[in-house]
Amino acid sequence: MWGFADVGADTYVALGLVMAAAAGATGLAFGLAGVVYIMIGLAYTELAATYPVAGGGQYFTLRGLGDFWGFVAGSALLLDYTIDIALFSVACAGYINFFFPAAREITLSFGPFQHVAVLWAAESVLLAALLAFLNVRGIRESSLLNEVIGVVVIATEVGLIVFGFAAAWQPEIFNFQWSRQFPSIYNFMYGTSLAIISFVGLESISQAAQETRRPATIVPRTSIALIFSVFLFATAFAVLGLGMQLPPETVEGRRYVQPWDILGLHQDNPVAVIAKAMPYVGIIAGPFAAALGALILLISANSGVMSASRLTYSMSRFHFISRWFNVVHPKYRTPARTIIIFTSIGIIQTVLAFLAGKDRALDVLANMYAFGASTGYLLVFIALIRLRFSDPYSPRPYKVPLNIRIRRGRLTYEFPVLAVIGSFGVSMILFMVVWTHDIGRIAGPAWVVACFVYYALYRRSQRLPVFGAIRHDWEEQQQMVLREAEEFDLLERYRAALAARGRSD
Image 1 (tube, helix red, strand yellow):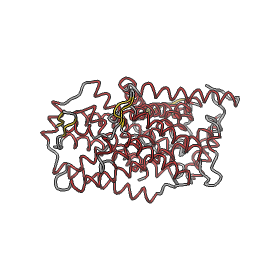
Image 2 (cartoon, rainbow, N blue to C red):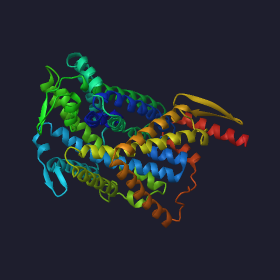
Image 3 (cartoon, rainbow, N blue to C red):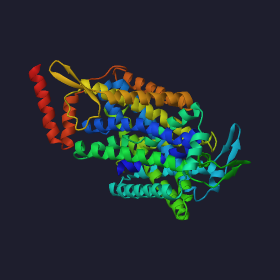
Image 4 (cartoon, rainbow, N blue to C red):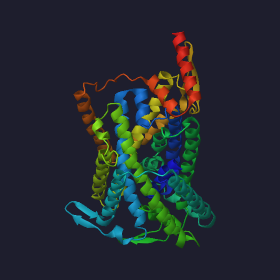
């Protein structure tokens, strides 16, 4: 439920954005991105169960590819966490404004900046600032709260989908969208690359793995359930939305009648619009879905604040950034510096996104979100392949399917074919992001380059190699991780494998 409260929120954001770009092919865009996401999820499941450490993708890449690439993965994921704060704060305010629709229309134009939604922007900034304040004071994420919210969200989404298909979905409308409203190749690629943000958030599972007892059992079971449930919900909402008769709208003299067009107009609260259009129950379902969406999005924005501090802790531990970032507040005992710095970056990103205009704020943030996610995921896939050969001794409670056994001397390695396919899929998503996202292809790499400049200066100051790796005692650390996770059976297997290696040497 912790994972679902984080990952499940992404559909509330992505649906309208993808609809506006992919039009009648929205279901296909979600389906293709979802297949790639399933492979990503299975890779994370194997790695998080094998290495239950809070660093997530950054740690996996460090273990597999060394310090430099571990840093690159960390900087890409850190970009995602700051965007997480910004994007979900903006989306949360959007669902709140379902009750106050005029707030979205209050705009100002000044200089080159036109139609800036100042009230919506102010709401988003205040929400992010509130989360920073609460986290500095020591807010704790309640497992019970996440469980309750996760159950309510799942029940609500199941109810909307089942009732929607039974009472509101019209196959002739869906067929018309598919046959007459198919997008251009460029728009389809743009929509597909945005659809990947529906499935971002798997880091939350790996981040939580170190705090989980017996992760070898818990992580695979919960991760696989999460992967397939989120995939089904995202694709079902896309197909449902394309086949519903939504109330026509007229904006600036243009009349919108197609479902994808109307949901594209409501990028800030598409799930609430679908719920409101339900026959019989819409008058209640719409406001309820909006309130629930605002709540789960606020929790997801908060997870960005918390995850940024966890990631920076891991990066400082491996000498990627200064330990200055992990100094705790003398009174509240929280990483106040990290919270304030990265939430402030998220707020700056929010303001800059709104300067692009009220109709582009979410799109701008999603551009960068997709770049950071696809970059980090590609490195994780490559690290998974490398770790199968560089660390064959660590017990793997779960392995991605489709493996080829390769015999080398006395050792048998398992080559993960699915990881190769997944790498190709994520590479295609990254290519789509770079090709179709005018902001993502500039701002995303610029962020990584800026982080690298800091990394290089810091490593030089500490007399550490910039492109090389410092020595890590991974075997001792793996034993410590398994011991702390209470995976004593795996610990004994790991020690036996190391002993057998020593005898063969």
